[in-house]
Image 1 (tube, rainbow, N blue to C red):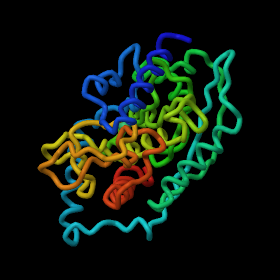
Image 2 (image 1 turned 90 degrees about the vertical axis):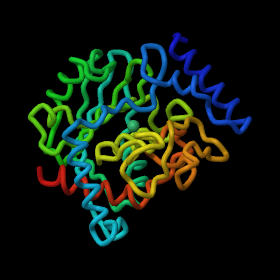
Image 3 (image 1 turned 180 degrees about the vertical axis):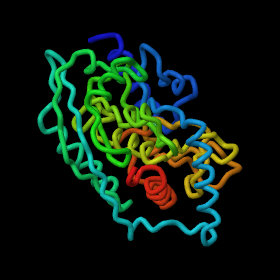
Image 4 (image 1 turned 90 degrees about the horizontal axis):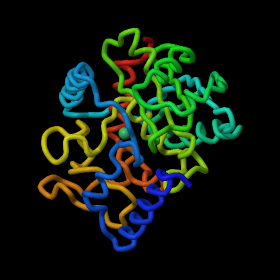
Length: 297
Ligand SMILES: [Zn+2]
């Protein structure tokens, strides 16, 4: 067992102890989950760019003006996104054959209430040890995406690999005016180790659900902490920082704001079994963002 796996198991054990005691993970343990060379990270998604934030602010303002904040009804929406999956295998380690269908089934189920469906149109298989252990913002990531990416900015490319540094996945936010490089680098990279049937507590395929939320322009529920606009979605309660594990009673880290921490939201850092919902506001945000930033581009 390598050091990273040992540390991961130790952190998960501490999680269980805290959960058993009904406590939220203390700040020093949350710090241990930030990306570093010897810990793991729930999500490495890039921070929204300045252009994304400015365009999104206009979108948020328009939502509030429209009919007093009326939201696009997810129930009546129907959006099908074409998906290209890229399986990267190592020399001595291959991603299981059934992995893609299981993972697609998970996201179709999780996004069903949003009126969003994913249509698998292509799967590529590549054996490349350097890409298999890809890291974020690396030469390998750029080379892999340049070689494999298909479709337009409205099409989803997903790369499954064995991510390094304990990373579960990352995914870019949409850009209002994507450059040629933005278009190549668009697409989600997810570790198959934490996909369906993978390493608990991230073994239900919901890492990809979370990452796709970013692809559809959702921020983390704890974005901005207790102050300011937070994630820009009205019906996700403000949250001071990420909550890990699956606390039986959700903490109220921003007591001056309505609601308790949304520990069951897909856009937090809870365990897979704990993440079960997008809010109506998030569903509306995703559909509007797709129409604005990605559809037909
Ligand atoms: Zn994230």
